[in-house]
Image (cartoon, rainbow, N blue to C red; front, side, top):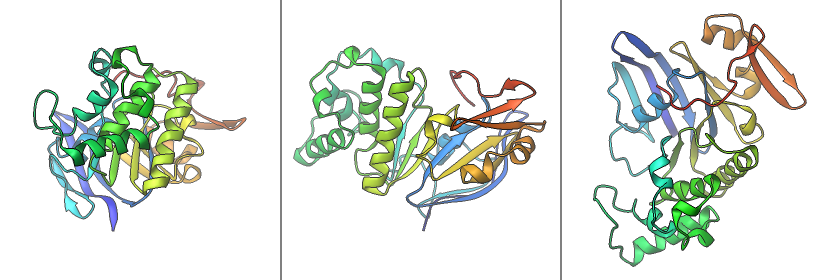
Length: 264
């Protein structure tokens, strides 16, 4: 069974088409890097998979069922996390607060739920962060806790929306290695959006590149090519490979230079 299937999916905001007639299928257990310029629809796609965005046309299936709100089979790490960084909660409380997502405040957990929190913290190597105030943690440590949150309930699909934003290269590597480890240990399917492919090289099984309302899914070698990206961008694109890194250029300007703050 495919983890994710899109059939002729179109999404528009007003007169602007974000995704146009997208058809694709992602097999279970894959680690997929979701790439594309700012505004290409990376966050919109994830929200649509979560059932939070109305489709103009087409259908999305998650693990064989129609995409709907509150799907317990999906774990999600959103792009905006500044509020979490200011919390005086302990790490354990931050993770536990997602156990009953439909309620406000810290939940009173039973034994099974407490075991699940402990399991999720252990899965991301964050047991030592459980007693520390969240506001004292580094960006990389906070990201571990947010991934632990997303792993509560043992989801089968994990969506991470730009988890590398504002992290230095060392912490970016740590987060990518962590997610890859979780994927290999659990067999979970991962969609990991990023503004730059390079931190994901060596971890991804496939890349999903969005641009101009279109999409290309395949291996790095199949998708990150001048012809494919030129089609998506609608203008000539050059792909350079230098010392194990990949650069996507329009003219002489690096298309994805610098992290963006948010996406459509």
